[in-house]
Image (cartoon, rainbow, N blue to C red):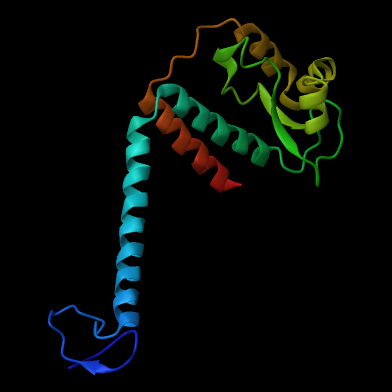
Length: 178
Protein backbone atom coordinates (compact mmCIF):
# COMPACT_ATOMS: atom_id res chain seq x y z
CA UNK A 1 0.00 0.00 0.00
CA UNK A 2 1.07 3.54 -0.73
CA UNK A 3 -0.31 7.02 -0.19
CA UNK A 4 -1.15 9.17 -3.23
CA UNK A 5 1.04 12.31 -3.38
CA UNK A 6 -1.87 14.29 -4.81
CA UNK A 7 -5.11 13.24 -3.10
CA UNK A 8 -3.53 11.49 -0.05
CA UNK A 9 -5.67 8.33 -0.34
CA UNK A 10 -4.10 4.91 0.02
CA UNK A 11 -3.79 2.71 -3.05
CA UNK A 12 -2.00 -0.36 -4.36
CA UNK A 13 0.69 0.75 -6.82
CA UNK A 14 0.98 -1.10 -10.14
CA UNK A 15 4.63 -0.04 -10.52
CA UNK A 16 7.38 0.27 -7.90
CA UNK A 17 7.80 4.01 -8.48
CA UNK A 18 4.13 4.98 -8.82
CA UNK A 19 3.44 8.08 -6.68
CA UNK A 20 -0.16 8.89 -7.63
CA UNK A 21 -3.23 6.65 -7.51
CA UNK A 22 -4.43 7.53 -11.04
CA UNK A 23 -8.05 6.88 -10.01
CA UNK A 24 -9.34 10.45 -10.24
CA UNK A 25 -9.05 12.97 -13.03
CA UNK A 26 -7.16 15.34 -10.71
CA UNK A 27 -4.52 12.68 -9.93
CA UNK A 28 -4.10 11.85 -13.63
CA UNK A 29 -3.84 15.58 -14.41
CA UNK A 30 -1.22 16.04 -11.68
CA UNK A 31 0.76 13.09 -13.06
CA UNK A 32 0.65 14.53 -16.60
CA UNK A 33 1.61 17.97 -15.29
CA UNK A 34 4.66 16.52 -13.51
CA UNK A 35 5.59 14.60 -16.64
CA UNK A 36 5.30 17.75 -18.77
CA UNK A 37 7.48 19.74 -16.34
CA UNK A 38 10.15 17.04 -16.41
CA UNK A 39 10.09 16.92 -20.21
CA UNK A 40 10.24 20.72 -20.45
CA UNK A 41 13.25 20.86 -18.13
CA UNK A 42 15.00 18.15 -20.13
CA UNK A 43 14.19 19.92 -23.40
CA UNK A 44 15.49 23.28 -22.16
CA UNK A 45 18.77 21.67 -21.11
CA UNK A 46 19.10 19.86 -24.44
CA UNK A 47 18.24 23.02 -26.37
CA UNK A 48 20.92 25.00 -24.50
CA UNK A 49 23.52 22.32 -25.27
CA UNK A 50 22.55 22.31 -28.95
CA UNK A 51 22.74 26.08 -29.24
CA UNK A 52 26.20 26.04 -27.61
CA UNK A 53 27.42 23.54 -30.20
CA UNK A 54 25.95 25.53 -33.10
CA UNK A 55 27.37 28.94 -32.13
CA UNK A 56 29.59 30.64 -34.66
CA UNK A 57 32.94 32.22 -33.84
CA UNK A 58 31.42 35.70 -34.01
CA UNK A 59 28.70 34.68 -31.53
CA UNK A 60 31.39 33.41 -29.17
CA UNK A 61 33.27 36.72 -29.61
CA UNK A 62 30.08 38.61 -28.68
CA UNK A 63 29.75 36.45 -25.56
CA UNK A 64 33.37 37.20 -24.66
CA UNK A 65 32.76 40.92 -25.24
CA UNK A 66 29.82 40.87 -22.81
CA UNK A 67 31.87 39.13 -20.12
CA UNK A 68 34.87 41.41 -20.76
CA UNK A 69 32.68 44.53 -20.45
CA UNK A 70 31.17 43.19 -17.22
CA UNK A 71 34.71 42.68 -15.90
CA UNK A 72 35.68 46.26 -16.82
CA UNK A 73 32.59 47.66 -15.07
CA UNK A 74 33.34 45.55 -12.00
CA UNK A 75 37.06 46.45 -12.01
CA UNK A 76 36.33 50.18 -12.24
CA UNK A 77 33.43 50.18 -9.76
CA UNK A 78 33.77 53.19 -7.48
CA UNK A 79 36.03 55.09 -9.88
CA UNK A 80 35.03 58.15 -11.84
CA UNK A 81 34.33 58.37 -15.56
CA UNK A 82 37.59 58.07 -17.45
CA UNK A 83 36.53 60.81 -19.88
CA UNK A 84 34.81 63.52 -17.84
CA UNK A 85 35.60 62.60 -14.23
CA UNK A 86 32.00 62.44 -13.02
CA UNK A 87 31.28 60.05 -10.15
CA UNK A 88 29.72 56.88 -11.62
CA UNK A 89 27.79 55.96 -8.48
CA UNK A 90 24.10 55.40 -9.39
CA UNK A 91 24.78 56.05 -13.08
CA UNK A 92 24.69 53.79 -16.12
CA UNK A 93 28.26 52.60 -16.61
CA UNK A 94 29.71 51.61 -19.99
CA UNK A 95 32.95 49.89 -20.86
CA UNK A 96 34.48 52.52 -23.14
CA UNK A 97 37.35 51.68 -25.50
CA UNK A 98 40.00 54.34 -26.09
CA UNK A 99 40.96 52.86 -29.47
CA UNK A 100 37.71 51.71 -31.07
CA UNK A 101 36.98 48.03 -31.61
CA UNK A 102 36.03 48.60 -35.25
CA UNK A 103 39.25 50.38 -36.22
CA UNK A 104 41.61 48.47 -33.89
CA UNK A 105 40.21 44.97 -33.33
CA UNK A 106 43.55 43.76 -31.96
CA UNK A 107 42.95 45.96 -28.86
CA UNK A 108 39.38 44.76 -28.34
CA UNK A 109 40.20 42.79 -25.18
CA UNK A 110 43.14 44.87 -23.96
CA UNK A 111 42.40 45.88 -20.37
CA UNK A 112 44.41 49.12 -20.67
CA UNK A 113 42.32 50.14 -23.69
CA UNK A 114 38.95 49.83 -21.93
CA UNK A 115 37.69 51.72 -18.88
CA UNK A 116 34.43 52.61 -17.16
CA UNK A 117 32.69 55.63 -18.64
CA UNK A 118 29.37 57.36 -18.12
CA UNK A 119 26.70 56.78 -20.73
CA UNK A 120 26.74 60.46 -21.73
CA UNK A 121 30.42 60.41 -22.69
CA UNK A 122 30.36 56.98 -24.31
CA UNK A 123 27.13 57.29 -26.29
CA UNK A 124 26.46 60.97 -26.88
CA UNK A 125 30.04 62.25 -27.10
CA UNK A 126 31.39 59.14 -28.89
CA UNK A 127 33.77 58.34 -26.05
CA UNK A 128 34.77 61.96 -25.38
CA UNK A 129 38.17 60.93 -26.76
CA UNK A 130 39.93 64.28 -26.26
CA UNK A 131 39.36 64.18 -22.49
CA UNK A 132 39.87 60.39 -22.45
CA UNK A 133 43.37 60.94 -23.94
CA UNK A 134 44.19 63.49 -21.24
CA UNK A 135 42.95 61.40 -18.31
CA UNK A 136 44.04 57.90 -19.42
CA UNK A 137 47.81 58.33 -18.76
CA UNK A 138 46.97 59.39 -15.20
CA UNK A 139 44.95 56.20 -14.72
CA UNK A 140 47.29 53.60 -16.28
CA UNK A 141 50.61 55.45 -16.27
CA UNK A 142 52.51 57.11 -19.10
CA UNK A 143 54.53 53.98 -19.97
CA UNK A 144 51.39 51.82 -20.38
CA UNK A 145 49.71 54.61 -22.37
CA UNK A 146 52.68 54.82 -24.76
CA UNK A 147 52.72 51.03 -25.08
CA UNK A 148 48.99 51.04 -25.88
CA UNK A 149 49.56 53.65 -28.61
CA UNK A 150 52.48 51.67 -30.05
CA UNK A 151 50.45 48.42 -30.13
CA UNK A 152 47.38 49.85 -31.85
CA UNK A 153 48.58 48.78 -35.31
CA UNK A 154 49.77 45.37 -34.15
CA UNK A 155 48.91 41.96 -35.51
CA UNK A 156 45.19 41.23 -35.84
CA UNK A 157 43.52 39.30 -33.06
CA UNK A 158 42.77 35.78 -34.29
CA UNK A 159 41.31 33.76 -31.45
CA UNK A 160 40.03 30.24 -31.96
CA UNK A 161 36.71 29.21 -30.43
CA UNK A 162 38.54 27.23 -27.74
CA UNK A 163 40.70 30.25 -26.87
CA UNK A 164 37.57 32.41 -26.69
CA UNK A 165 35.91 29.91 -24.34
CA UNK A 166 39.04 29.93 -22.14
CA UNK A 167 39.00 33.73 -21.99
CA UNK A 168 35.30 33.74 -21.10
CA UNK A 169 36.03 31.37 -18.25
CA UNK A 170 39.05 33.45 -17.12
CA UNK A 171 37.09 36.72 -17.08
CA UNK A 172 34.21 35.10 -15.19
CA UNK A 173 36.74 34.00 -12.57
CA UNK A 174 38.23 37.52 -12.42
CA UNK A 175 34.73 38.97 -11.88
CA UNK A 176 34.22 36.64 -8.92
CA UNK A 177 37.38 38.06 -7.28
CA UNK A 178 35.82 41.53 -6.94
